[in-house]
Image (cartoon, rainbow, N blue to C red; front, side, top):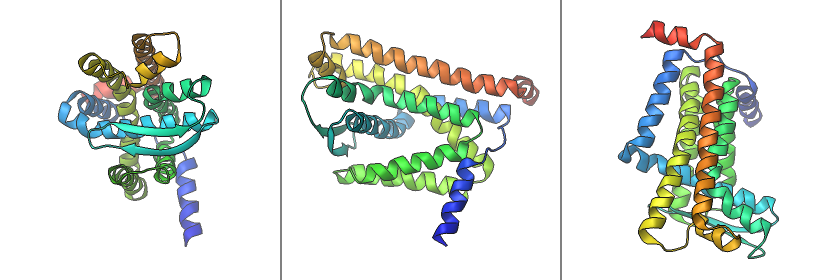
Length: 251
């Protein structure tokens, strides 16, 4: 039974689906924009961005040879990833840098996957990432956030129709690509308002010769670059399928 279920999941992950209609793709992009732009919806979606943010810190810490102590996610959409190792040096710089660019880079990778029609593969890959995060979560709200996100993705991936799975995958992709630069803008607003010196940009300023504002600009450049490139990939793939003609015909 378990073997059959795993084989079914693997088949879904590795089988390319059908291209979405142009109208459906445009509507999904519009919904994602509203989610990121409208404050009440963004307050919910921001938790997902935070999960990816902290997972990026954790991955960078492990890749750079640091040991991971745990991840905490808070109800105000903030988070904290604690790692052990040298307090300075390239590993610490990479760990601090990864957080704000992580959602954008994941969104770029997601754009590549959905562009190749692997919508189910993207959703199941995210489920695996969330499952790996669970063992490092160190507070109840963080555990709840990751579990709810994982259950939602499993439910859509397992019971959703091909159209539902495709829409969900594109929605996740667009929210990551659009939400990453908004999070950077919020970072700078928070730095200007509170001036606590505890942000990732301020940490990088202490670790490097460059000021915090320099790192905010770098974060914004990377996230906007991923948004432009990911959007171009998706649009190019869609246009190659006659998307514009289909969209205008649908309208």
